[in-house]
Image (cartoon, rainbow, N blue to C red; front, side, top):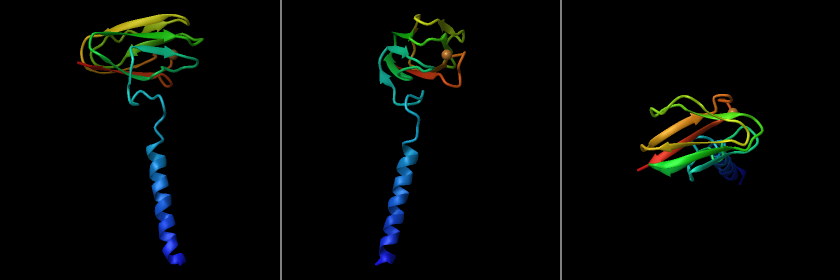
Length: 122
Ligand SMILES: [Cu+2]
């Protein structure tokens, strides 16, 4: 009986291991499934929420700094301006996305912790 049970237990453990690996992507990462919104919040502390958004071309996206520290939005690709849009606590910055594509950005002050993306659809 044991010789039959053991392979089944081994298979079950393998399935659990695969599920654990598949589920380990950090929540709120820049490459997570984008949320359809034009408003990104910066709650305490050191993050963009939601980190990945999607909007239609022509939409003005806003970032509002509700954290206690100065942050920024600095675009990293897509031919967008690379100068950081700096927000002191309580401030908001906006940017209008004219062209479809996926645009990654970071806070230039905290690039390790703060990354986001905007997916612009036609
Ligand atoms: Cu920052």
